[in-house]
Length: 188
Image 1 (cartoon, rainbow, N blue to C red):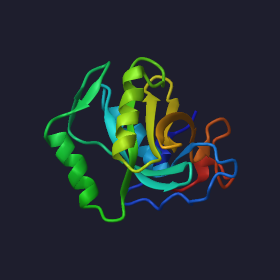
Image 2 (image 1 turned 180 degrees about the vertical axis):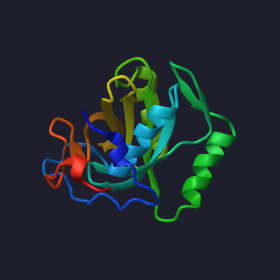
Image 3 (image 1 turned 120 degrees about the vertical axis):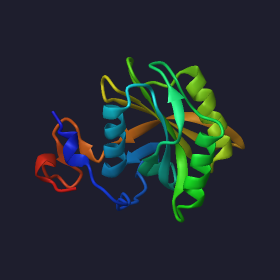
Image 4 (image 1 turned 90 degrees about the vertical axis):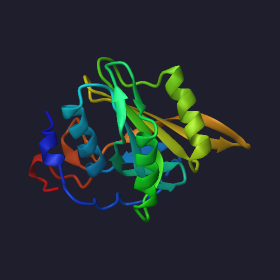
């Protein structure tokens, strides 16, 4: 089992190395910092929660360097930003953090798997039309720690939602980091 406590790092993270995926398939690449933030919130927030993702885009690869959690309300089956505090939080966060771009939204699921409901898909499309495309959507399951990713892309002048592979900063089956070293021995 992975010891996620080893993944915590404080301060601004170093960005994930930006390299275009050779096959061009849609990918959401999570940094160790973004993953640690998600795991932290999963451990302390008992309801569903939502978050803005900050990072960079390179073709059909979106690099998520961190997350931002605005004011919100939630239960075991939904979450929503509070108005106006939650909307103001997101606006001010990205306005006052030079060089940081919002690349999408994500949310947790409490007692079921990671998937995008029809409401999530419609929200992803609406967000994709507001944010620079490509934009991404991510769900993470509290129970399984699994992810589901979608990407909003432009196709022939139309906004289209496609599945996106979620790439972790380590291999969860072997506990090896992308450089091949053992996650337990690595200092973040």
